[in-house]
Amino acid sequence: MTIRNFVPVLWSTKIMQQLYKAQVYGNCVNRDYQGEIKKYGDTVRVNTLGLPTISDYVPYTYTYTPEALQGAGEAITIDQVKMYNFVIDDVDQAQITPGVMEQGIKNASYALRDVTDQFIANTLAAGVATANVLLNGATASSTSNPILVGTGGSVVEPFTLLTKLGTRMNKSNVPASDRWVVVPPDFAENLILDPRFSSFATAVAANTTRVGATMGGSDGSSGDGYGSLAEALRVLVGFDLYVSNNVPSATNGADTVYTILGGYKGACSYAEQIPEGQPIAYQPQFGFGDAMKSLHLYGAKVFRPDALVAAYCQFV
Image (cartoon, rainbow, N blue to C red; front, side, top):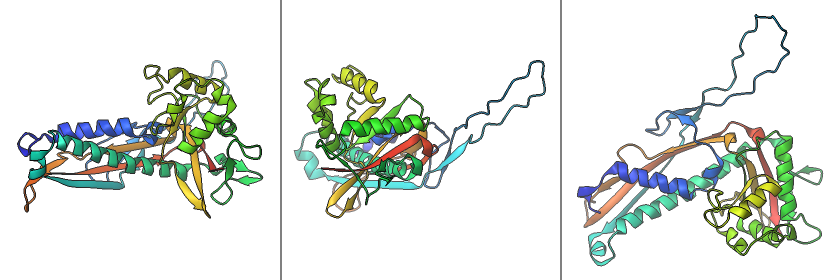
């Protein structure tokens, strides 16, 4: 690639496509927003509707007034802005395989994905309704009061925890479609060791610990060799299970406590954009090389705290 044949809109599209494919928590939110994102501080509108009131109908009565559903047109503020800015020296370009700038863009996309996924995860964690945090004993689980998860007799088995999360969703009337839970690799490993999982696990089960995948593949389809496994998990626990290294965590002494989150896509909305005219290709004033820079704007908001669940867990 050279500055001469650089077309910003094409590269912007490629970056956004790579972000969509690579994000994990990005699969757990909706992008149903209206409006354009051009700069930091912009707002976009999200169509969120409350439930209508159900009342008795009296035949031959014609004086009913339609109810205005509440919550329509709520806003997300684009309050996050990140950037990258890298240069590839002409000497390096002359000596390495063609396509180095393309690889630089892929690396930038991956780095953006990692930052945005952490942001979405933390937004979801902060938005969970207090009543939807699983208990550990008589009180809610927390960083200082984590649920001990493992395969021993005195801890909660991973499959049991998934079942409890599913039950909490049911009690909170979380819609049955598009449900999800994201777990760290340690949890997925323990799940595979659980007899209730291994009883239907296949030869590809060990591959389900790959970061960024669902237990059934990125889209839950059967075309990638995980479909039957995904269907089994959906039947048993009622949601897609994703594996990620970006599960929110905190330390409790020398131990790590993970915030395992679940919910459905309608609970949180997310919006992101590469501003118009970016990324920008340029040649630095000093030295010889091609450089690339761009901003990435995004924001998220939880609209249904009651449709998210959480469990603070420590693996033993």
